[in-house]
Image 1 (tube, rainbow, N blue to C red):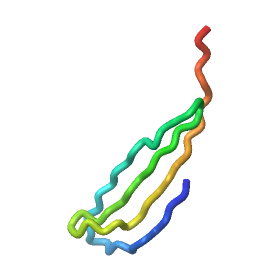
Image 2: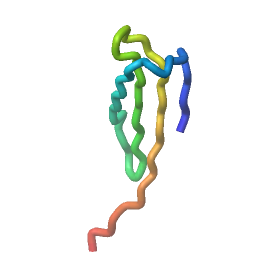
Image 3: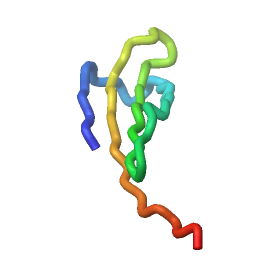
Image 4: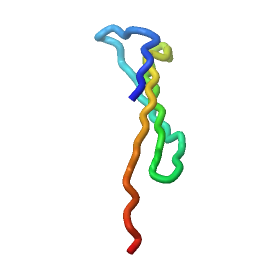
Length: 59
């Protein structure tokens, strides 16, 4: 997982976490996660995650 920190939140801040599936090809899927300050809307962190899964046999 790759995480880029843009801003450091205070311990009192309320955070909003949103995730989005970027897409997939074969056994690969990619996701994107944003962490924002709920009050100000400032982006705190962005993360990308790659998922590799084994295909289930159709037999």
